[in-house]
Image 1: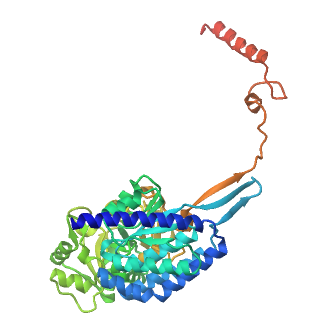
Image 2: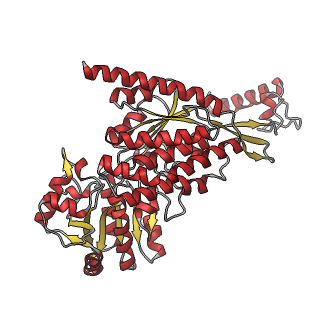
Image 3: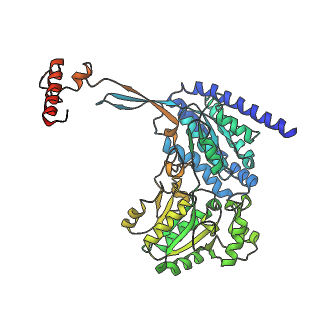
Amino acid sequence: MENFDYDLQSVQETRNLARQAKQAQTQLATFNCEQIDKIIRNMVKAAEENAVSLAKLAVEETGFGKVEDKVFKNHFASTELYKFIQPMQTIGVIKEDKINKVMEIAEPVGVLMGIIPSTNPTSTAIYKAIIAIKSRNGIVFSPHPSALKCTLQAARLMNDAAVAAGAPANIIGCIAKPSMDATNELMKCDEVAMIIATGGSAMVKAAYSAGKPALGVGPGNVPAYIERTANISKAVKNIIASKTFDNGTICASEQSVIVEECIRDQVMEEFRRQGGYFMTPAETNQVAGKLFVRGHAMNAKMVGRSAQAIADSAGITIPPGTKVLLGEQQGVGEAYPLSYEKLTTVLAFYTVQEWQEACDLCIKLLNNGGVGHSLSLHTENPEMTMKFAGKPVFRILVNTSSSQGGVGASTGLSPAFTLGCGTWGGSATSDNVTPLHLINIKRVAYGIKDFTGSTATAYAGCGAQDTTGAISEDQIMSVVNEVISLLRKKGDC
């Protein structure tokens, strides 16, 4: 009975949040650029002032990642994001083609539903709140139950800061009593116009099946290929920096390292020198046994954990200061557990003979749970970059840390914590999601071609001799009779 009451309260709360957000969004839709910018600046200020406390709360509640890295994520999702989106035109006339006389006008989508993952809860809430307001949308968050407190706090801070700067009350909401019933209610309620889903595959699929527009992102299973011309020291440094950033909780983090036989020993030695530990086959099996449940589903207790914590859990001994654990794999699929996504400080390690074999292996790994997302390449050969540009992903990250590169921190990609995987990965977009994905565009088009005549006039000249373009009935019958006469002579009629 108690659970039944909770579910009823949860659903009712969700309905209230959606109605309030819709009422607020209707007002926000009338705001101009200056008003919106003032609101976002205050949200950024609040995010920065609370970056540390939110990071601590997230680590304390979920056990995932590192405080210092979550602080950076909160900063990136606010200050760095604002720098990028501030010049974006998302209100009023955003484009005018004076030659073709077409004018484009931005309109908000309406109320958004933001699904928040437990791996990046506060930064994702901040990011989605800011891009929603930039495009004059309201948003209601559905938090992961294991990250409820920190997500709720981030949402409240964003809403309070927005309202203090002039936004309508309740423009940003968050479910305080999360449940599957509440999430389903929010997905399907009339007030919600679009869903932005960041989370597990099941949740993303549910978002796409809700019967309304959705922007969902699939999993990443990023292969990192160190090609023979690569700067090996730099490549290893980038991979370790990426995999240890918030202990591997970003979906763009590397999952497998692929090296050529001719540089294998150098790469392994460099990993050892920089804090990598190569597990024995027995140790690899022990760690894999702890990492996964129900086949290759990630064990939540191992997500975002340090190498030492994983080693302790698996009962293996590793050198002090170890940063990442590496396990050699001979193939891809069920028999090779490390070939799947691992949102923690563990990497699969593969050896190939040459680039073509590496290419084939990358495709197998991507099809094993990361197609459409990202691929990491370390090379000094521009031709090799182009060979890999044809792989089935929408982010080819060259000579950089994959985590930071994918979200746009170390590359020129759009700063984002929702990374589309395109149709290959079952996503509606292949982009890093920005405010431009959250607007409708109406077009005002002036007539530039004279189309006032009859259809016959429009298609004049097709064999007709009349220079005015008009074809008389007599002319048509003359052509028909001539064709019939020719056919009779040939015996075809």
